[in-house]
Amino acid sequence: MRLVGSSSQQEGRLEVYHNGTWGTVCDNGFTHVAARVICSMLGYGHVGWFIGNRYGDGRGPTSLDEVQCNGTEMNITDCRHGGWGRHNCDHNHDVSVSCFSELRLVGDLGSKGRLEVYHNGTWGTVCDSGFTDASARVVCNSLGFGRIGWSIKHAYGAGSGHIWLDNVQCNGREYDITKCRHSGWGHHNCSHSDDVSVSCIATRLNQLLSLEEEVHGLDVLKCSMVLSGERFVMMDSLTQQQELSATLLDSDMSEERWTSTSMVWAAG
Image (tube, rainbow, N blue to C red; front, side, top):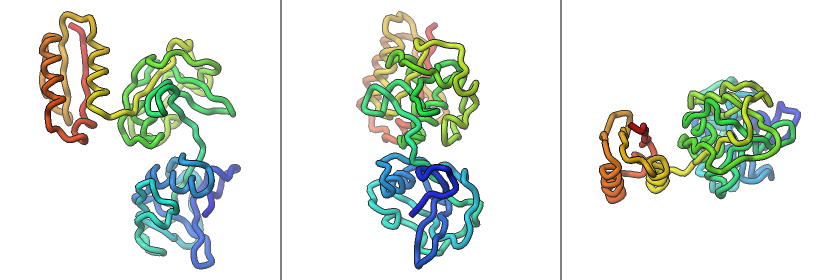
């Protein structure tokens, strides 16, 4: 197995060796999880990102298609796939993989913390200007947590060194935060007190703790809970909010539906 087309062996178009020939891998079903299996095989640790067709079209056979890994496999061939040489794609769907660790969350076991990005050999922070939950979801997806994520403002404090990015604006569909709109590397109008923090934890407790942090000390609260895109309930007092929170904790809502739940708050 190898990554080709880049100046670094840690990133490139994925090629696998089978029956005496190098061939490419189609992107159908391929995810960051599969990329982490690749990078682990190549000795780069359990990091890795699927980066689309960044390193272009390969040549020769398309060796694998519909590769689906759960992340525990020791070899890409242990993952589910369509069979050697069986595919329904052409070379403009050839997978590229990056084994660079370009993002990290500093503060809470990697799942929640101050956002830092690696650029020009140095870790630096990201300013909160323009940064939304959509941007947080791109970050969390890049880190392998799936398309969940919340901006938690400056919860993990100020960083040090470079402020690499400012005015980051993602639509949520990007596979890498550097593909979102931003002011350019090193161009910013903020200080480290504005360093953004991100949470990739999708649990009921996390959402309720966030709720408690937002409403603490308020006498009147107008809260809309949006569930699967539909307005669910409106609360006019902190007491009502607390009662609903207790009810939700005891409910039998599936984890999937909780994951898709967002809360929008406005003091009134």
